[in-house]
Length: 145
Image (cartoon, rainbow, N blue to C red; front, side, top):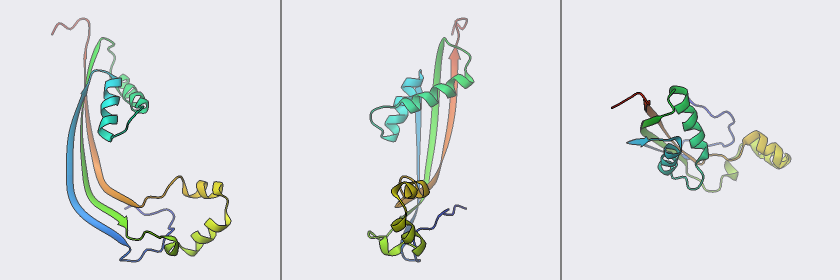
């Protein structure tokens, strides 16, 4: 089970909203190059602009399973499932901070706070899973069909 590594809030039983549901989605992405695959994944995730990180990962993945430099085809099927959504019910969270957290935030430097807590804290989360199946095919100069 997942537990928080640092408890920063004193939430009681009624302070967190939980919604159970069943939501599944399946998407198939086909591509003939790492760049095309990266653009499709970025579009699927709703990311605008640069998709170079996805292209690098796709290129490494494709090179790991492929020896052919002639022509390649890649099919990715991704199935996502969401089963639980949790969120905080309070807008003003200062009163809910633990005494230890309040002391830390008031006494430490911004750098120390960042090092200890990171870039952000999540105000909500969705729990579920992802299954990805990748099939690659290659055609060589000697292939005639």
